[in-house]
Image (cartoon, rainbow, N blue to C red):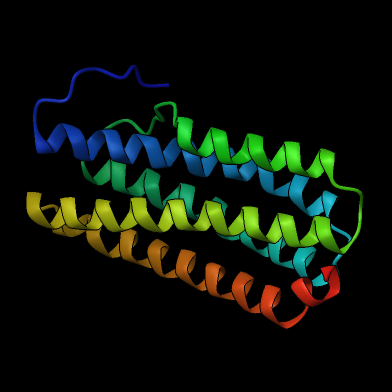
Length: 166
C-alpha cells in the first residue's frame, strides 16, 4: 500500500486519487460476496454477484491505467470506503434477515456507487487537465458501469425492495 505523502502538484493529486480508488475497488471486491450472502432477495443477490465480476474488471482497468502512466498499481488507504463498508457490516448485523435488511443493503451499495461515481468523475477531469488522454477511455468505461449499477439499484429499490420493507 502506498504511503500518503504531501501532495504538491496536480499530477501527484491525480496519482493519489488513482491509488485511492484502486484501494476502494479492491475493498469492494472483498465486501460484495459478504453482501450477497447477507441478502435474502434473489434479485439483489444476483446484482451483487454481477457487480462483483464487474468490479474485478474495474481493478484490471485501473492496473492498465497505472501501466499507461508508468506507475506501479498500488492502493493508498481510503477511509471513505472503509467507513461505508464498516457501516454496511454494522447495519447487516443490527437488522434481522428480511426486507428491511435487503433495503438497507441496497442503500449501502448505492452509497458505494455514489462514492465511486464521484471519484471516477474527478479522475477523468484530472486526466483531461494533465493531458493523460490515453487513460480517459478506461476511466469513462468504469464510470458508465458505476452509473448503470446505481441506476439498477435505484430501480430495484423503487420497484420492490422498499415496498416489501414497508
